[in-house]
Image (cartoon, rainbow, N blue to C red; front, top):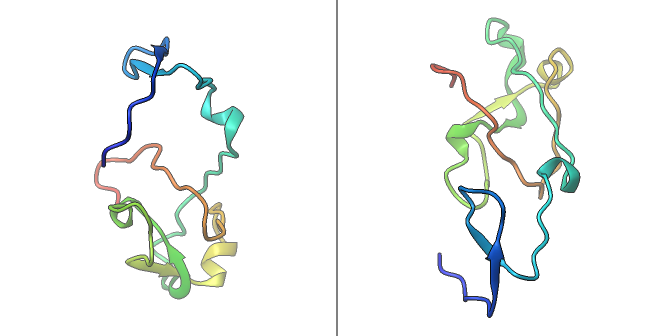
Length: 102
């Protein structure tokens, strides 16, 4: 993906980011978006899985948009865990991943 160059740039103040367009303002993501976390329903309880609610995980996040998920949870799985139902059209990010997490 290629973007057009802006006429002027300024240092971002963030080493890994480098320069940004001069008219941009920088803010921490927590000030620009609502951060929502959650937990995975127990995989030991079969009644939590194979339902009709998409369960999006990092393995589903390989393109700019997500049309479907490899796994799905049930309504009881949603209510029995600390996970959060996120409406369609939102931005999803992977914050961290444990080794061996699927």
